[in-house]
Image (tube, rainbow, N blue to C red; front, side):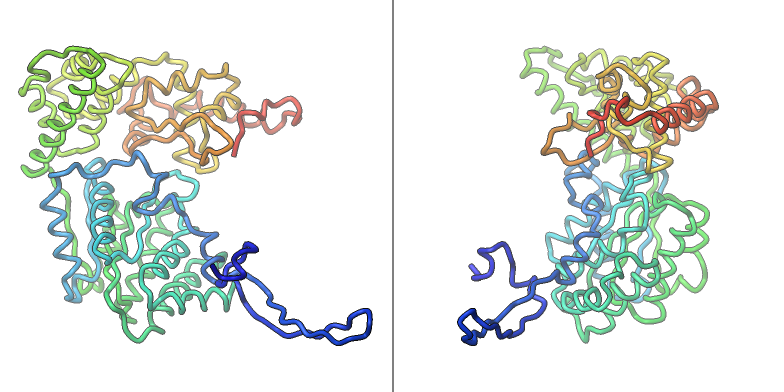
Length: 474
């Protein structure tokens, strides 16, 4: 152990040392070596890291990952791209409709790159998330990871922060140039070209911000030779299509679209087979007999067909059927009863799942939906109860029946990591906000908006001693 570590210091915290002379009471001269301690550049950077946005962050659980044996074709394409040294392969834009499994693929790819020592950094955006839904921690998070994954960048990044300790609060361009671009340009050579993964950039707040992030990377790669391989995933939103389809970007950017094809169908069938087998054995372990041939092969085929290549449909079906508090045969029957001619199977599934809660629970849904639109309204179930003046436990009871749609954080303890209720997929927020899709479950209506505003104003105007603050653990 370093001798200074015994007192809670670490050698990396030493910023300077000096010699000082002191007079003792008796008049003798005594010389001491006094060390002054301070935070290193990496320590300063660490405080601005969005740990929740890393590909292997525990906070992102239960984010879906690729099921073993699925998405092999697209993962092989990504592997081949990652080792392609041609200039036109510097950036890869992987795009597809909502629910196609882009984040699961990006997570698996990032994990594979990390396992082979080739991942530089990753950032997984999340719409409405207080930290993952903005750009604020993007460049500090990327820089911190690069300083740890690429040894040649450690010193330049540390020096950049120590030279300007306020850089973590500066504007986007300043952070990009000082934390990323200059450290790369000030490094003569790299052992490997690091891979950066930006997942769901369309879920970062503000279209102009999304475009600015892309322009910073594109300009640095095209004009200054920034030595990275950059994977971007998103929906094909018009402003992103415009940015990434421009003529001057074609020389450094490839594009790949996730499609509803035979391989997607086969992957979903593989996933359903494995998950139904898991559910069958779990319930058999609880002494619930589902029969020798459950579910029937044609039922799995029907669900794979209805998924239309949308992985979130299959994942939601499995979460719904595998609910430990219901009978899986009854849950499966409810899904199979949905209109087989419908062209919107995911919406039908959402509506079926929501049908188990009373209509007045739309107030709870509306509060959660507000959090997907405005990160300042992300809340725990207990927060929602206090805001809406609901009986204790009522929000949790309503959401417990919706575990296949929402992440429900565990009860708070003094050791808990602060987590909030959130939809398990962005498409649910889109569904809830569109009256043409969600009908009576639509939360984007004036009645609910007015009620929510009144509740917020009442809470803000309440004297501190009249509000039950025991629910507001942060």
